[in-house]
Length: 293
Length: 328
Image (tube, each protein chain N blue to C red):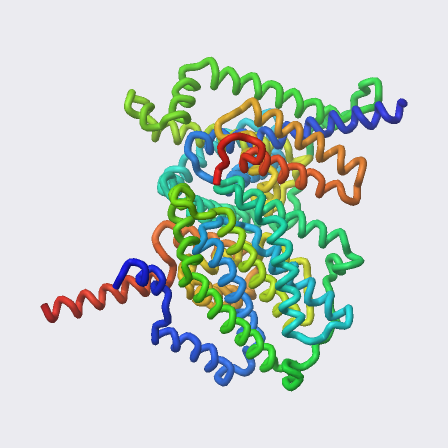
């Protein structure tokens, strides 16, 4: 019984904290795709950039974790506005294929750039000692880092909920997601909103990369390595919806952790198989009225 | 010319195409020491052509076509291990294996479009890659499969060290399947596919069986991709996990974009350009090569509509307009 409880608590805690990092990276994409309708395959690059930047600040300039992470997030958010103005503005009305191609191109350039700047191997970063310490939760001991991730995730959900549901910025954003033309007609500056939201989305990705590097190791291939999972979460959550994104990301985290823990040999497939089934169930309208084809 | 015949003859044979095929034959005589890379070009041309049928003509945006290329390659190698050495029927069976998978997946997959479609194609290909990686008793895992043999083509042409047989064998397949694709895109079925690409909802409204058409195109395309994979295995005598990787899928898409998507010769022009650039950048490390692909993609989307064939077409139109201006 104790062994079972201990396994269960392990799966829950590790799964949820893994899900929180996935959520942090994905939610930026959920928001930008909801507003801009752009399939952004380069989103992972902003997460990677955030991680690399935070870790190199800590390694090279011994900046403390608590300052390095926000600094990296801010830098990536500002940088992303530049990229948005340079590249993304041109593909807002392009075909899906063109959006995929251009953003895959950006991801490739990012991968090559990361390799050039930081070398081809995993970029090692140390967590601050506070986070690597273990804490006894009764059933077994856990790293504080995992609890820290869950706390960050919780805080983020509350903040985002407040931002989108309770501020005038959120109201304008939701208006533009629902009906862009109408929003523009009543005087909302949509292009400016786009840049702002893109900065927030990329900043959130950078936050995921910067706090998650102990779970998702930093390496040049990072921008594409976790992209499939992130994009699946986005297509399951639906464009512009925060609440389902939390659920889906945590679900993915827990199920994936559970499968890898319980069935190590086939664990990696199960989550993909479940997710493919869910996507087809949700989007193909197999069991709903009005098929999509 | 009636609208009907114009639609059906849009992709009819033009004499200038002979130049392309004569060039491929000329390579055989002019560059005997480069036949290995020339064979790769022909195989990837065939793979890109199969992708063009779904991506270019039917508008199915997939980033997982390597699944079928890989299934074909592994099937070809495994059949040879099982004692099946005749290359042509081996390739056909490999194509059928790939088509079989497409037939299973297609009906559910092709209900999707947009982002969910892209995601699921990527995810299926990722699953296959992981499965092949884990099932090392069957696929050799990271080490791949090697040391399998095929009997001479038609019982006559031995697989020579310099790759003459390989090159002509691959070229023969490309020519045959190219004729098949031309027939398809010029048929009413092919025109319906192009209609679905342009406006899926409208095609459904006029009563076209949209998903059925797409599944048929998808299965045919998988069959061709499987044959391309089989030729890859037969001519290299080696299959590695790379044939199933997402990079292989993206490579084919980039080739099509470079050559011109939705044109019969898109992949056939894009593949040589892509592979030659990659070959000469090979002394660099692979990450630097990604700079080039990335930049090529960005430039292709931003500035070069329709790829190289699009540029050629515009130059041709410009020359024609000059000629037209001279004799009013």
